[in-house]
Image (cartoon, rainbow, N blue to C red):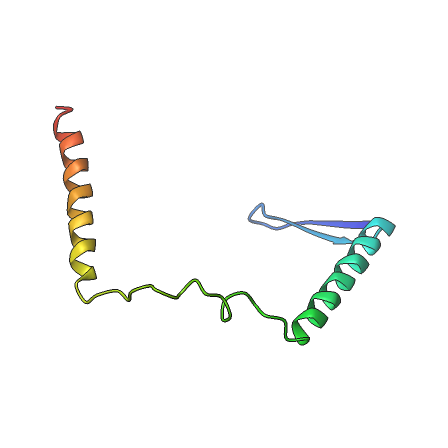
Length: 90
């Protein structure tokens, strides 16, 4: 392992390290590569992704056009609660 340290006039420290992989790092890299290849093969087979073919959307309703009103009400209630918490401290 070779380590090079350089100081600049602004007291910054730059470290450059030329290091080779250890056997453990090489083994982990190989295992991760194999895992990625297997995952790519599974995705290429066209297996269901669990979203498009699921039935969780059946019997649900779409959001109405008044959803923004509910959001404003929630924000107002939270804001009022925070205001009253700080107003009672004085």
